[in-house]
Image 1 (cartoon, rainbow, N blue to C red):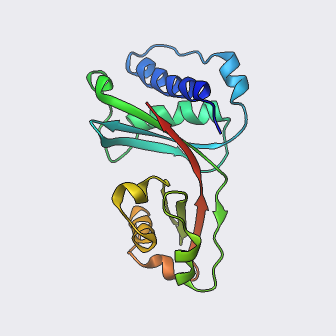
Image 2 (tube, rainbow, N blue to C red; image 1 turned 90 degrees about the vertical axis):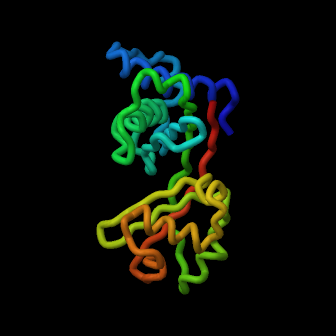
Length: 185
């Protein structure tokens, strides 16, 4: 569990990274923050404007120190999410930041695709699909927000990866689950 004080620091880091980028100002990360969040961990930063998705980018695998994953994901969510135009300064007052700190994804091994329904817990698990060079990820909060059951979650995951719904039934398809600690402004 991440303390409420550390959550505030991570949210401030994400907001400052975006604000300084918008103003084209140099940004120095507090060395104590870098030290405290130096362990590699997956993380996503989600931006919502008036409750609607405005950007979401992150690192599913622990490839960067947590502070750096949050810093880079915040900037990418604001300026590099291909689904949205770049955030502009005037929008920031209406944007709320949400951070998801991820566990390491684990392959869900099933002998029958219908076994996924038993293995996936809506609201707890996020999912990653990998199949023939395609991949997609949905955070744990997506299924409850959409009102999806496990089958709808898997089909939504396929669509996110650019695959037809039902691709998850193919035995060559890999489905990974992960959990996340989610907090926001």
